[in-house]
Length: 395
Ligand code: FAD
Ligand code: UDP
Image: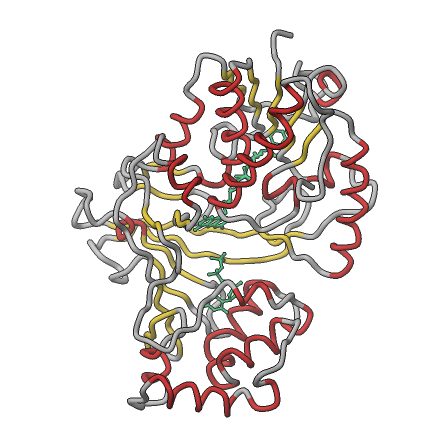
């Protein structure tokens, strides 16, 4: 086998490691993916009927404040000046998200200034104001008070997670900013945008190197192919970005995941909802949000009489479903520790990415951690100065 390194999974984590190893060290890298396309969940394709770029695994918005990651991704694509804004439809009325002064004033039919709004929310957070809650329910009430929490967060979260919010970690909601200004940008990061010629063109450029060989429709656990687990581990270094529990044949029990179902529809109108993402926080609507893809690229020439929308439904992942969000219950965290111990004992195999570490990583975080893995572990090992071992941050 004329390969110096095997990368399992061609998502942003795997592609970054492969690109670094090929470009920086001149290594011969094989990248395998069990799907029939590269790019993992960031993959996109043009809808055959309308030509509108659709993100097959859910809308992906690139944003980062990490200068090193920003410089790195700009080697492969330019970004548009798209700025993400989300609206939410509650009881027949549309409000801006994340919760900001506009949302608060519309909800309470008021014209509060920032200080008045803060005082009101503090009062409505009641006994939780000023505490440090550890679960999503208490954190949500503490951040925005009970009435706003019940309107915009409680049922959306119940639909998204189907787990009692008092059992969910507070971090999930900490991702959403709350602002006492009228700024309704969804992200706080310094850099934001969408790849000018689409995600797939970007991802293909990362893999476009004579030393990188890409093998699609190739499953690491399929013993009949040369890059299988038994054919490679112990022979060549492996960076594995598939699910960590699957690698160990679920020896410590399965980790729980949420999966999503996407219902795609072409509608005979040039504009269905006037914006790219509309959330549905009420309990009587079964989906969590609707994406309308044309609005991600207002600069493009798209048909004016048709549009593509995608309704998003969330549920627990069963066997054979795509794992999307780690649920991260106390039992999961316990199992993860056991898998990390096993991962450390696995010689010459590193575990990375969203599935390999059981962590919710945004794209910039997956890229950033792949760059760190390359710099801190792979490069010293390949230069012959260090053994290849998983570290605490890896798995
Ligand atoms: P993945 O992209 O999941 O890639 C892993 C790859 O490994 C897959 O291609 C899989 O097929 C392959 N694989 C698994 N098992 C095997 C096996 N046995 N053999 C061979 N190949 C295997 N991030 C943002 O920054 N902004 C967003 O707006 C955003 N939106 C998101 C929306 C959704 C619904 C989801 C689920 C994620 C979103 N993300 C977003 C996160 C983003 O998708 C991840 O950061 C990124 O996909 C991580 O890349 P990865 O390489 O770790 O994993
Ligand atoms: N959330 C909510 N209402 C909303 C949007 C988000 O309750 O309108 C909560 C929900 O629990 C969700 C979390 O905030 O899981 C994080 O939202 P984000 O939009 O960042 O999630 P993602 O896009 O990753 O699904």
